[in-house]
Length: 273
Image (cartoon, rainbow, N blue to C red; front, side):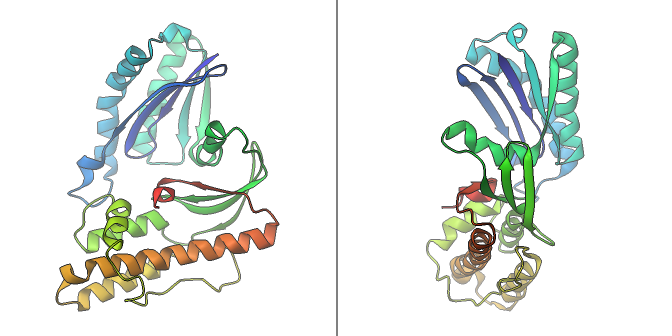
């Protein structure tokens, strides 16, 4: 049984063919990062238009490189949300059109559930229950995966996502987009203790988080600095440490509250070393 997967929730057009018998057969991704460097973040209208231009050529490349034929596809799965509505609609339209043409069933996928379960494809020994820290540009949540299809959100940001804070802080310092990788790189040469940025909700007693105030604290500090280039690495290191201190504290607390100490890191920010 072969499944064609389609993902267009934000700024990447991604396609994959997965076999129940042989696992992942092929996948391809087109990133829109270069489109948004000058804006410092994703522009939804531009993202949707780029998906519409790239998705069919990407599908053709996927089929050519894998040697698979559309007639051998048994199911089509696609990201149904959450995400940017314009981007989602491109994947939705292609998935439903192919479903009609091939007369195969559709499997709508929740973007966040995909993050929670994707590690199970790579690590066969990983089974629920486990805790997932979903930390990306759009979401920051602590979720208990009780079983396949059964989830409980036990903590989340009350304002901005952690990844969004990285992007905005990078923009403040004119470092480009996306912010996560460049801040991580700059932080390698910085002193994480030089700037005493706040750790919002660190001792709130709940598993909820906040990153808006941290972002604002960085803004105020940047506005006071006369020689910003000389301080960028220290600001990056101090900001990154503050953000991750919060995440680590909340994860530790989630272990205590649930008794579960199996942790899955998911989302773009999880790529930070």
